[in-house]
Image 1 (cartoon, helix red, strand yellow):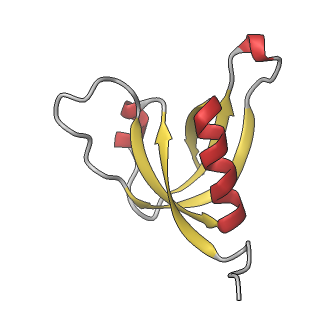
Image 2: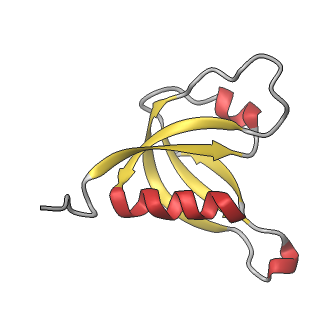
Length: 96
């Protein structure tokens, strides 16, 4: 039997601004926003509201500013949307 799409899973998400990720702590709630290039014809859109931060992994020493990882607890279907959006857009978070 497949688990329901609403069951929570942990999803590592790369946020474009590493400094923002350093503000987060496990237990925080965040909205995740995808911002695409204006030439793509799509502005910013909210992918998930109120996701719980489960982990903020340390950023490797000497890592370039390619953003930072945060691990979120989200429904299974939402995790798939986050992964897909992360491949084509810059992701940002706002604290709830």
